[in-house]
Structure formats: C-alpha cells, structure tokens
Amino acid sequence: MSEYEKSTLANGLRVLSVPMPHLHSAEMMFFVGVGSRHEAPEVAGVSHFLEHMLFRGNRDYPTGPDLERAFEAIGGYVNAATDIETTCYHSRLHPAHLDEATGLFASMLLRPLLRDLETERRVILEEALEDLNARGEEINPDTLCARLLWPEHPLGRPPIGSRETIEAIGLEDLHRHLATYYTPRNLVAVAAGRVEHAAFVAAVERHFGAWRGEEAPAAPRFAEAAAPSPQSLWVRESDSQVSLQLAFRVPGRERGNSLALRVLRRVLSGGGSGRLMLRLREELGLTYGVEAQLMQTAETGSFGIDLSLVPGNLEQAIGEVLCLLEELCVTLVPEKELAGVVRAFLYELEFSRDFTEELAARYGWGETLGCLRTLEQERRDIAAITPELLRETARAIFSPGQARLAVVGPWRGDIKKRVNRLLKSFRV
Image 1 (spheres, rainbow, N blue to C red):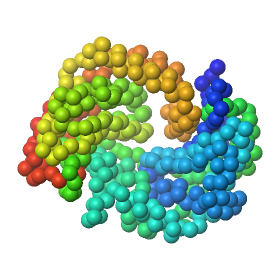
Image 2 (image 1 turned 120 degrees about the vertical axis):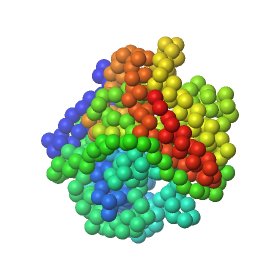
Image 3 (image 1 turned 180 degrees about the horizontal axis):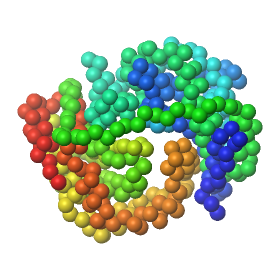
Image 4 (image 1 turned 90 degrees about the horizontal axis):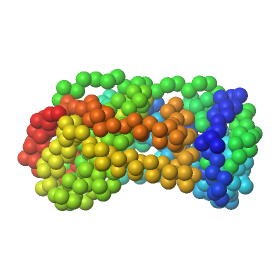
C-alpha cells in the first residue's frame, strides 16, 4: 500500500491523504505557502497576524467561540502555527466527520470576517513581549542569531514581527495578504488517519472547488555572502543564567544535503548519549541541558547549538563546544556510534507511523515546499550515510568565518572578550 495518495483539483489545490485504517481518529491540516520570509519590512508579522484573525469568526461562524464549539462537536480542537515559510491550520477529528471538518476549514480560510482587530492586536503584542526585556530589547537567542545569519533579509526577522510593525498593521494589509497568498494553488490539504482518499477529495472539492485565485508570488531569496570573520551579539539581562546559541549558516534543501545534516545533528544531540550532553553535562557538569537544532529553507539554513548555564561556565562551555565541532571535522565518527544513531533514526521513523499529526505534517509540509520525502525514501537513503560523508559535511559547515553567537544574560565584559577570542581562534 502506498504511504500516501495525492490528487489536484481543477483550481490547483492539492489534496493528500495518509491512510492509517487501524486508528480511530484523523488529523486534518491545511498548509498555506506563506510565512515571514514573504513579508515586506513594514508589515513584518502580517502572516502571523492574519493567522490569528482567522480565528475571530467568519460568515458561517460569526465568533471565535462559535468556531471552537463547531470543531469540538466533531472531536477536534483547531489550532494554527506560522513559521518562516508556511502557515498551517490543523485539528484532530473523528473520521465520521470528514466532510464537516473540511467545511469548517473552508469557513475559516475562505470567508473570514477579519474583525476585532484591536483586540487581537493586544493579544499578539502580549505574545511578542515574551521575547523582550524591560528595556524593549530582544532576548530570544534564536532571533538574535537569525539577525546575524541573515542580515537585512526577512529570514533574519522573527515570524511574529516587531512591536512597531504589529502596532502598524491594518485591515487593508490583512485583506491584501489574504488575497495575495491564500489562493488554491498555494494551499495543500492533508488528512492522516482512518480516512479514504476519494472521500477526502470529494469533501475538499465540495467546499473549495469553486475557489479561484492567482499564483502566489515567490519569496525573496537570500544571496549567500562571504563571512570573513565570526560575529557575536550580546544582550545584558538580569537573570541567574546565561542563554546562548552558537550557529552556523548551512546550505538549503536545494543542495540535497539535508539527511547528512540531520544525522550530524543527532551525533551531537541524539538524547543523553549525544556528544554535547556527554561532554558538557555528564563529564563536566557545565549545564543541565544542551541541544543542537537544524533549520533549512530552500536556499539556506542554520545549524545551531543552544544551552543555558551559570555565567562562570560560559567560556569553558563555548570552548568545549568548539572542540567537539573540530573533532567532527577531523576525526571520523566510529562505525558503532554511527550505527546507533542510524538505528535510533529508523526507530523514530517507525514510531511516527502511530501518530496522525506527525504523518500529516510530514506529507503536507513537504508537498507545500516541494521537498516531500516518504518514510521509505528516508529509510533507503540513510543507508548511504558514511563516516566520511559526515566528516565532509562537518568541514563544509563549521567554517570559522561562519560562526554566529548570541548571548543573553548577566555576562561579564572580560568573559565576553575571551569568548570572542575563542571564536576568532577556532580553526578546522
């Protein structure tokens, strides 16, 4: 049996289903191919703002509570998320209510009222303030590192926008964004669970088939620039710990290196046996937790390492992280260690087959961005990952000039100077 089925309506809307007939539930997602990278600077955050506004009622369900109760009546709980490249609306549902759920999403996406703007603006401002200190400075290391990695580009801005742009976005901006990007060719509908593909296609055709719209414009691409030296950004904040991210810019999905990067991340951060945890926590006791993360867009991405620790451990921890990265660039990962990482990777692929939301996200997100990979493709391709490939990948991304460091907390000036010297002396 195929892992998924796909159909395309006459208006260009793509419909995917992932059969999981042994289950008693389903997950429905609608992906829109728009995120913060599509936004002009003056309306930064408009994709996220619009996502919020679609919960404020529509012509069929005039208020947010009306909409929520309608989803609850079919076993669901509707939610949404906006990131750099996509906006996703999703809900669990009882399989017997496939058509009703599709109709509810159509009400949200096609017939929103976009009212109570000022109320929702206050909600979004409260959300945005979580990443600002009392002086209005950004204190999220993810955002600070993004600013260093992609300066003067939408990728370097937080998806929520800034306080200034959130306060400036108006109804005209929301209507324009809706008309420009919420078009059938820019939408993917996916359902995973006890669903029949023909029934889902029929439901989407019934509720979305008459919809028409132009092709959505592409996002501005990031032009790779030379990075002659590492860069850091330090924000002083009164706290008991320092939070930091050390990141390197990596090639995007178009380069076809995603799987090697994902395996490399697992070598460093594959649970308690990952190299970062073993060195920084188990051997040296420098931090409670440390994690590596990978983010890729079409043409670029980042490989980051996040941790929090007491200020006195900052210099030693950065030094140890750089040593671990250097080891990956110089020494082959032992076959036994790689085999353990691959085994865990394959187990997680198998485990994902038990979760409707994981499979719906895999196929829906992949189809939206043109990078869909089946579980079978992942299983087959991971067999081609070798220690030599991992070393080659590490050497390509952990370039001294590409290092970007964001530090937030009660750091001392002398430690800042020594850490910056460490970054400049990093060589592979």
